[in-house]
Image 1 (cartoon, rainbow, N blue to C red):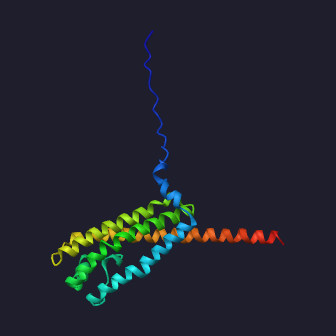
Image 2 (cartoon, rainbow, N blue to C red; image 1 turned 180 degrees about the vertical axis):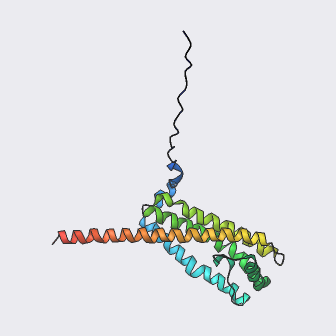
Image 3 (cartoon, helix red, strand yellow; image 1 turned 135 degrees about the vertical axis):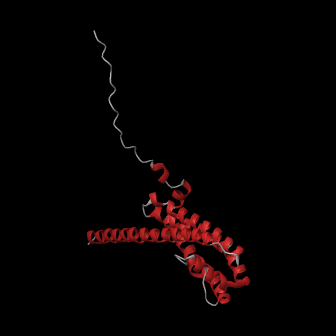
Length: 204
């Protein structure tokens, strides 16, 4: 009898499940994602963003004729970065460097804590990494701005472009995180008020 060759059937490619472990927040963030710590994070963030950082920027503006810091620009061309650098002067550059590696070294950590804990507390644990993203892009941005400050009056347009990319990434992360917090926080507040309204009606 002739031999029949066994032909293997082609295997169907099935989609692999997404590894959700990568989106699970670290245990220390889950542990501290409480309403009290959210308020603490917001308080510290407002203290830095509303008082400490503006005070440092005002000192630099006093030496630069009103020109602010590069960090607060969402977008800047190499020409704009060079123009801003040229206004600071030696003393302004010195103050800027101090700010970069004191308050602006701590502020990203505060932002990481506030955004991550707030998002987890709102039930958006899969977005916790936005806090880490903002912190890391802010630190990397600081490195490139520091190099530009130290090198001035020498200037590298390529360095300014890379710095601007991380600046835009930082601000995009902040804007997106704030949108998530405002939208889902509003939903949570409305749901809580609706529940309280139903409970008050049931007691009548």
